Length: 137
Image (cartoon, rainbow, N blue to C red; front, side):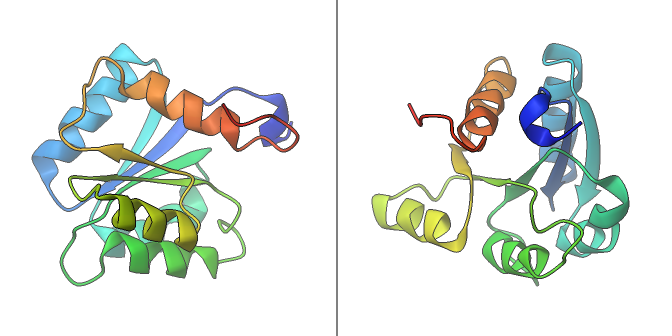
């Protein structure tokens, strides 16, 4: 089954803040019914993403050592995961920043703080826009 034939089921979350990671995981699993693989920081994500093979990656922008945009560039160079859409979660949502994220290849951006109740639907909406041949709303 290809990504275009299925619904969003498995999300990888990448954040250096363990509390944010736990809240995001809870929101997506308990409220959204998704399977979540959590990575505490970009190094863990880069090391484990090939094995995880999620449908979608949700990544913090501001992380020490390797920030989200740099991690995205590295993921895009990894053949096994380069096709997986990446959504940034960040408080940095000025128009020029949003343009920069999208220019790097981000599938979307979710503003922090986010609403845990609507997070899954926001990701599903972004996921659907990634399906080839489908109109972007």
